[in-house]
Length: 420
Image (cartoon, rainbow, N blue to C red; front, side):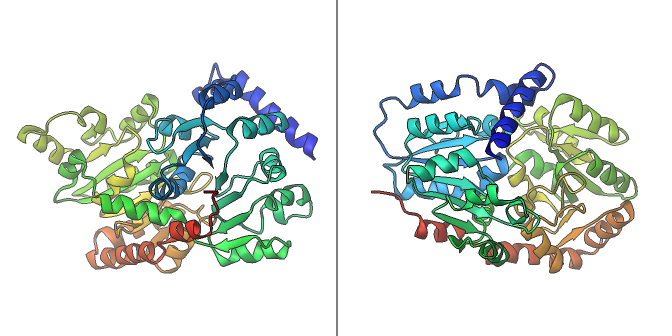
């Protein structure tokens, strides 16, 4: 199995190389790993401080890591933080993150890379986020006796660890000093296969979204656009989401839409503008650096649709929503609904949400709503947008749910062992 695993990783990197002339993400993925071990050795040369290595897959996992990193910075300022990403989207967005001393791509998980990387970094402790299980890295860290943790982890019975063929993958779990899991179901699943190095601590994303709310970041363009109007904010949307929303939009008056697509490439933004060609559409990027004078205020009031064609502000945009629609539910799975829920906003999304505990919980208590068809979307949005009492009730459920689940970061820190 080890041979198959290592071969698969090499084939993945080779495929990225051949795809790179045609696909920008593949290009970034491949080029970002060229001579990477040498680069890391050069950048770390001469360092004598203790290093905490934090690894995230992408942007979403980074948001889970962020509260822990920033609390560690406050409590242990003498420590240095090395942050790695698997995906280009995470690395490109956060390569200049101010609370990390170094930010790199994760070298591919081959035996030689794992040995060279761990030797070069020599971390005091390691924190992986949620779904990160890398066989060779974990084996190397265990061999060297380096305390290794995974936080905000969640397990399901359909995962490879719990299958008849899962012995190879189960070996990875024993490499962790502690696994901080989100819920009791994860704890019991791990116990069923003899894994007991677990603690229930919840999800650090609750701490992160609550912090964003507390920071009270104002986005003037969105504020002026939405002021005085019932506003639907659709975040991290994909084409199937946008088609449903466009169809609903035709049937209502006096509703405004802020649309923040997952993909902000020029071609995709043009496609969205074409989809909503019958309405006054405005792009955020055309206004974000412009002084808002009375004439521009009129333009914002008269426009029905605002497209957020930039990244990094969605979590603050949700504060202006009457109702939020979170995309991804017609693809591999929904995006982060807590970013909207923390503002006390009801949330709507597509059918693929079962992997996300917060979505299941909020659907069960009627703070969030899953839809499969156009008719279902129309009914749910009508119930929330037209009936203010329904909207307030669902929103209050969402806001309370976030507050009730705060504290994961503090729980994790109380268990984390870092040499002084």
